[in-house]
Length: 326
Image (cartoon, rainbow, N blue to C red; front, side):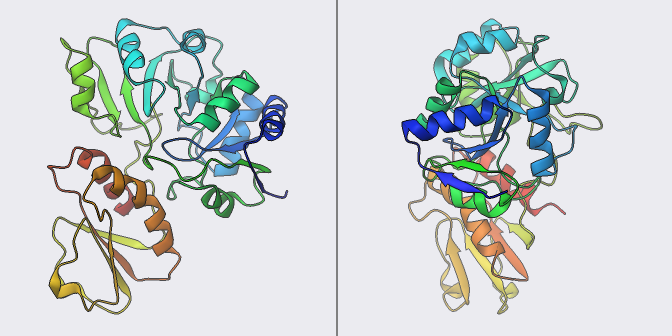
């Protein structure tokens, strides 16, 4: 099949909505990363996501909605969900809640919970409203590879596997959503860090303790993004808080968080992840830079971790560690 990128005109939004209603897949933009969308209530359509991505069936999908009323049709709502959704929806926050029977098992990997998000990107929101469907949409890339932050990334990764990609520009954030487990609202857990931080969650859920989950262990994960190795380039990555000058060779690249040390000025390949020193800038550049470097046939990528003082350090370093895992 021929993969084509479509501008988000009213005509094309209608075309994409029709494709989704008949069970096809559509690459969609969001403020986090580009997703691969299907009708979340159509098991056959959702099965196409797993095939296109070569994704294992025990990795659940996130369902995207355009109204809270729609979310309540899919999951059993609680006060903690209401408080977080009121503050951060639409936005880069996914809530894991007990699911209702309407949600197909293929979406949840057979679990009795479902992950829900209301995206902020205007093009994605327009598509959700036009299609009038909840849309399951994991990242639009082969399973385990670097997440896409532009429509061209999607086309390169999934060429001839999907027919439709909706153009929405480069992703504003560039990291996947924060995921919070609210199945037990008095004891929420952050399953995946993102732009909404632990401190943000704790501020909204006073009287509870938001903690990060431990190793998910065997069996289906509660949400995407929990595998030890994920978001990974083919090129090996070596992480360090400080990169040593003893490692310099001609076919290695050095990515510093903010500044290039003087001793590396003569290195063949050096990059800065965040020239302005902000975590949002680093998040916005991370996946795109890893994709660019992965295409250069290098022996190794040396990548400097974000400093702990950076508010988004937890999310950035989570993605870096999973990308570097072997």
